[in-house]
Length: 143
Image (cartoon, rainbow, N blue to C red; front, side, top):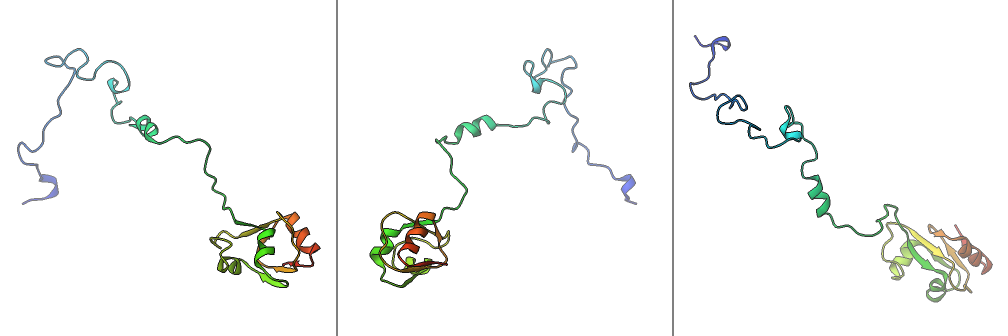
């Protein structure tokens, strides 16, 4: 009867490993080359960082770095003065519809470059200090 304790593999299916460095045809370095990690016992399977140098060399190196910080869309006060009327409400959606910004996803920041003569109400936008001063000076509000 066939049980786990009396199972045997087929004849010739299991081969013994070649005994290297025990005299005979493979002497001296026994096919391991000279010195180094691979020449030592236990050195072949524990090697790390295989091909890392090649991988690093293949990556293009460019100056500087790419920032991970999200940058908002920027618009200056002078553009708002040109495109909007007195007492107009300004939100990122309205700026996007008018084609003054490309995307709303990262938010909008209004900067204080130029002069503002109109009263504007600004909502849901980041505003620089100088821009806020100029908007409030013209009689507008920042919410």
